[in-house]
Image (tube, rainbow, N blue to C red; front, side):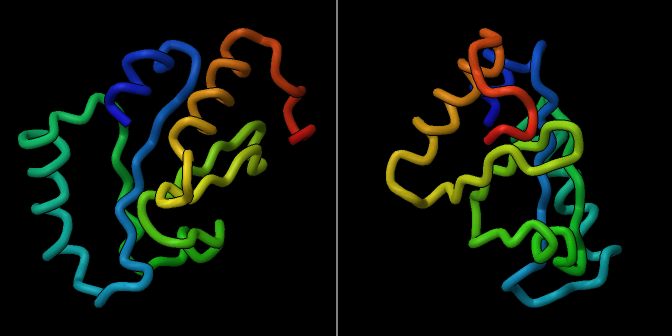
Length: 110
């Protein structure tokens, strides 16, 4: 995601979401310090990282696991790509290239 952000970050807003969906739910005050340490100091992520501490965001977008790429346009899901599917990152990169080049579908057209 850091590489994709470096390549497309001027045109696309990237947000990583850490979710508890499918895992043991821990209190926010236990998760947040570790998440912040990882994002800011270890991985040095150059984009926003959010905490979905009860898994409701992941459930709302019907994620299948991690990583799961959700692309929103105008607040609507434009692409949903489960990261463990074959060629998932390649499909995501092709879509980003089309989006940035302006050759892709209009928002909401899939």
